[in-house]
Length: 114
Image 1 (cartoon, rainbow, N blue to C red):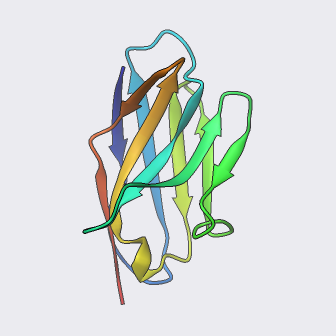
Image 2: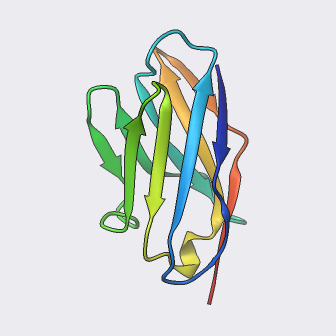
């Protein structure tokens, strides 16, 4: 399974970005898809995940500002990021899980400037 993320970029604080990720190589709908991020000098952390049955989890730091959704075709996931803050600056990684197997995309840079 390969995950391809897109949509990162440079924005000013308060603006919005939308990340997209598409998985290829799986005949099945991935159990979980979502996003993690890693800022310089920090550990990779959960941003948001969505299961194939609609359960959604957000990090406290993004709840109310970010919205995750899974779309058609199957095995796509989106992250709408509104009211971006300086501390949202990070490399964002698309994530997928099938059974006990975890899959990661290559990462897309999101930079928020003042």
